[in-house]
Amino acid sequence: MAGKIKPMSQIKQLLQLHAQGNGIKFIAKTLGISKNTVKSYLTRVKSLNLSTDQLLLMDDVELESKFHSGNPAYKDQRFDHLKDQLDYYHNELKKTGVTRYLLWEEYKLSNPKGYGYTQFVFHLNQQLKARKPSLVLTHEPGQKLFVDFAGKKLSYVDKQTGEIIECPVFVASLPYSDYCFAMAVRSQGIEDFIHALQTCLKFLGGSPKILVPDNLKAAVIKASNYEPELNQALEDFCNHYNIAIVPARVAKPKDKALVENQVKLIYTRVYAKLRNQTFFDLSSLNEAIREKIQNHNQTRMQQKDYCRQERFLANEKPLLQPLPQEDHQVKYYRNLKLEANNYICLRCDQHYYSAPYQYIGQELKVIYTRSIVRIYYKDQMVAIHPRNYQKGKYTTVDDHLCSTHQHYRKLSPTYYIHRAEKTSELLHQIITGLFEGGRPPEQNYKTCDGLFSLHSKTDPLIFTQACKEAISCKCYSYRFILKVIENLTRNGQPEPIDEKPSSKHGNIRGKEFYEQLSIKF
Image (cartoon, rainbow, N blue to C red):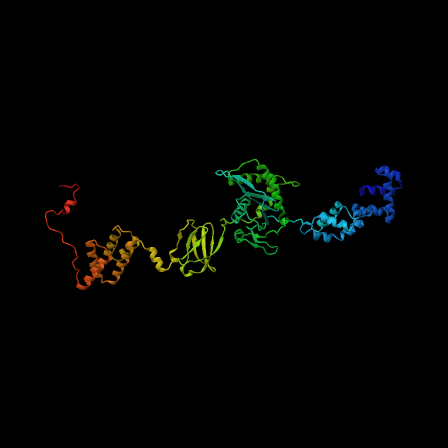
């Protein structure tokens, strides 16, 4: 029995023929085996102390163990010696520079009659594999989404510069149906990562309950097998879509083995098929990827009577959670001090936003998205603004300013004219004439403040008479009206204005002269 092991079905035929009283020569001829082999099996039967009927009732595996009890290699004394050293070799291989060949050389020095290199490595590898068994995972439909970035990149050519732009490829897979999604992005940063995730969920038409990402920085800030520190922007995204995050363990690709396998398939079914095409923008590259992924999902799977898309549509898509009506916007977080001018500065845009003056000098928490800027003091929102990307500009809510600053911001010709209209018709005429005088408006603001002050402090009859005098003289200065008021207050009537009387002679051009359309001499 030292040669090739015979099938147990044939050995049972041998036992039956022998029980019928047939000789060794007849059995060998009938079964097509040598007479020595027949003799060996019959000799083994006698040593077992079991009847032929008992042997025939055994299963083939059990019967084989009676005739061939294990591999002789594992009964060798050399194996017993090697087995005692396996723990030592397992630990030594973890050290830098230690190889199987180095361990074999040390093994031969201590055991010159031991195994050769090939047998040494075979037995060592067998034991190492046995210490790391693999578990076949089962997945519920709509439960998890595995995501990863492919190790190799795709690219497109910039039309203007001719530069080749390499793009990472985002890959996602639903483990139950093995339904796949892929797209190229500009980087593995948090914005592009979340954009890819959001596009993936729209492609699926729903969201799973659990997201299983790798330990890239866009997902995990600090890796841990027990409590990894997650990126807050990714947590906000998953909270928006009601998804829990369960990152894979560090350096444990088997935690998301199906998406790792999808990457290998995409190399063949997407990368290889696009290798001779040239793209000139990211959108056209993604359009081509989308087409190839659709073909991949519709390809019949090996050893199965369905494709990925059929299984996804039939069993998994109805169990996905519905998507919210609004898309998620990435949130950014900053802690900024409210400066004495009532503004915080968002450095990424070089833009300034106001907050209530009561919090000047305090550190405020700023949470902003692509469209909104929210400002918090502790747990209370104190300001909200639409995001503005104009550099060096200010976005202000008047109520955030103190009363003095609010008054100053309201200063304008319209403000003073409307205020005068509500106060006095004569004062309205004076201030309107003041702004029509041609000076820059800002030079008239103090004059207007002075006139309103005079109105509040002066007797109404005297103020009215002073205004009439100013209008008749078309002199709207604060000092002129103040002088008229002082004269009226002291004398009860206005003093004559210091003006030189016009000369009375025949050379005086009268009003009619200047009203002529053409000059007559």
